[in-house]
Amino acid sequence: MFHAVVHLDHHHAQVLHFDAHQVHAARIEPHHRPAHGRDEREEHALFAAICQALQDTPEVLVTGSHPVIGEFRHYVEAHRPQLATRIADYRPAAPLSQGQMLALARQFFTAFDRMAGVPTPS
Image (cartoon, rainbow, N blue to C red; front, side, top):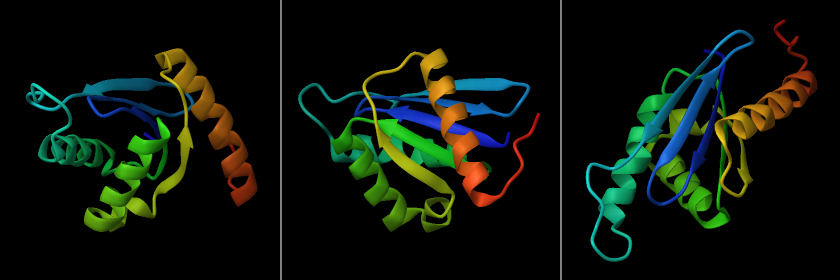
């Protein structure tokens, strides 16, 4: 798939891989959640699973609350620098439905690709 959009929080992530004709959705959750508060190991496991899901995607848009996308960005830059170069942007956003995620991502990548001189697939 040509693009992906990720919406994440500290507990799970929704990933949509898409191109002009199809969409593939995946929900990523840690294996177990801590009883109280945040567990950094679980968060890193979640971030690692997200990175794994994005490993073959050329362009990625990441959305979510400002704090969690900042933590994810730090994780990617420190542990997955090859993915860092393929993340087109980090955009704070409230929780979104799959339809809202897809609309946001299509609008973003149309403008992003146009700025880069890439023709938009039909």
